[in-house]
Figure 1 (cartoon, rainbow, N blue to C red):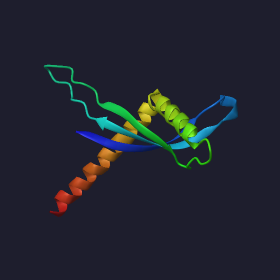
Figure 2: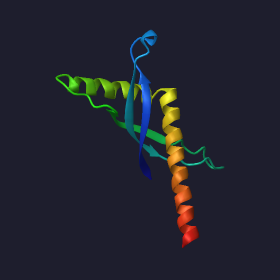
Figure 3: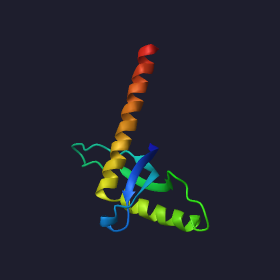
Figure 4: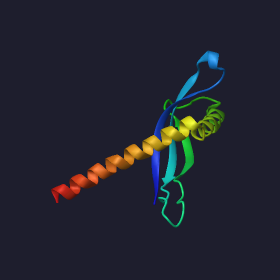
Length: 109
């Protein structure tokens, strides 16, 4: 089953000495893999980038260009080692919250 997730991140951009960063919210999906067995090696989970939005909206004449730039920057970061680690951490945290919620429902039933 594919699940949809959101991740807030601060993404650096421009020359490192400038220290420029932008706060974004990324949307992505996760499809769980299958565990390894004696018959096969299983397959890993799959992430798919959907979109990115600035936490402070762009306005003005260049908003569309800025939005396109942000989406490209965010997708590049998402596929980096740091982005993949952050995305998987978010997925596992949300799945753990769901497990706790379901356990509480079963306990109360």
